[in-house]
Amino acid sequence: SLDPKVKTPWNPRVFWPLAFLAGFGAAGILAGLNYRRLGNPELTWLTIGVSLSAFVAVIVVLTFIGDVATTDFTFVIVVNAGPAWLLQRLQGPLYKEWTEDHPSADNAGWAIPVVIGAGFLAVTAALIFSPVLLGDDLTEAEKHFNRGLDFELEGQAQDAFAEYSAAILLD
Image (tube, rainbow, N blue to C red; front, side, top):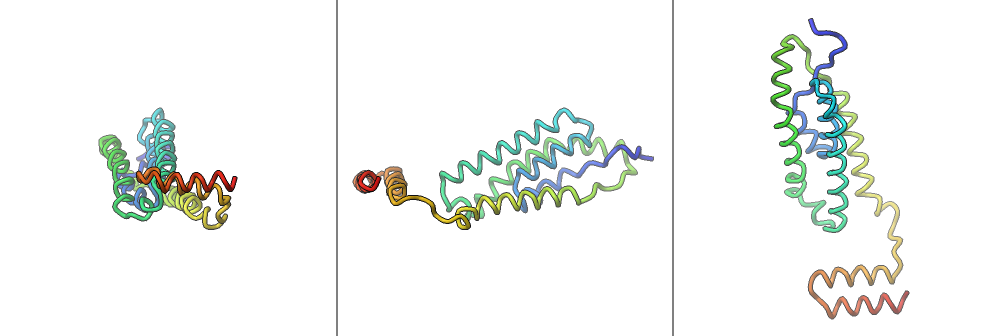
């Protein structure tokens, strides 16, 4: 019989639906917690830290890419599939070994993955909708400056110069 102090790990296949439904950050947190259940607690905080850092990095990059990336379903799949695949590949052999050593163990519950996923969905929704809820607080000068940056990045120097000039006049 299984020691009651030993918690059954989650099957690493659960990282896929969690990554697609709530984001790879949520899957990374679950993977970190799973390392403890798999007998590798030294990898718990490393996995959680790397996953959260990568999640924050993606959010920062998305702010520079713009709205197209956040609404492009292919982009969302690619961004979440890579980490889910990696996490499953890293934990798959450990999980297989654990299940062979504990053949009578029950399946791990869904409560923790659901709570982690719901939390990540709430954070992601807050990040996406906060500009809409808070309104546009940019001054007219800042708006012209931002349009100037956009034109500059598109190689439209004259339009960029005109927007920068308007920003200077308004500031």
